[in-house]
Length: 115
Image 1 (cartoon, rainbow, N blue to C red):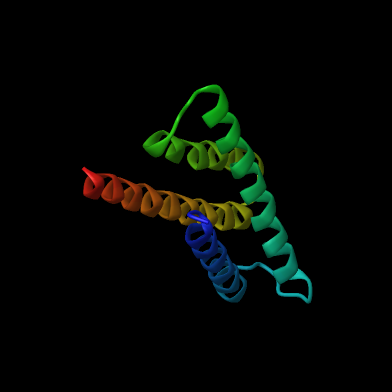
Image 2: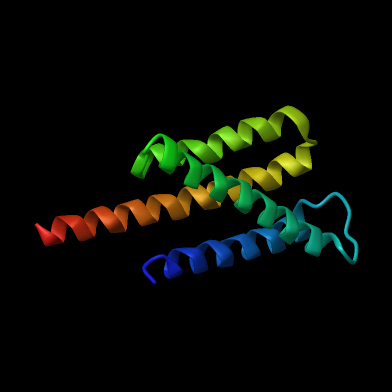
């Protein structure tokens, strides 16, 4: 229940980014492009979620260390995709970093209040 606001914030921002990308940056506009963008966002989120859970389990990273993972995924994207796909992945990476940072800040503030 504690994670629900962050998940909803992430979903809302990803949907907003998909709409903005479709209207301003998409190389072609078609009937299924928006569905493809949302599917790509889901795929990226799945990769990010799996990597986060694995590194928390294996390495024990939490907090700011977890903010490195989306950047690593972005480096993989830049090596093998075209520029428009990279721009879309860059936007989703920025959203995931923003939501992670907000979650860390509010968690730290909550810890400071309890002291």
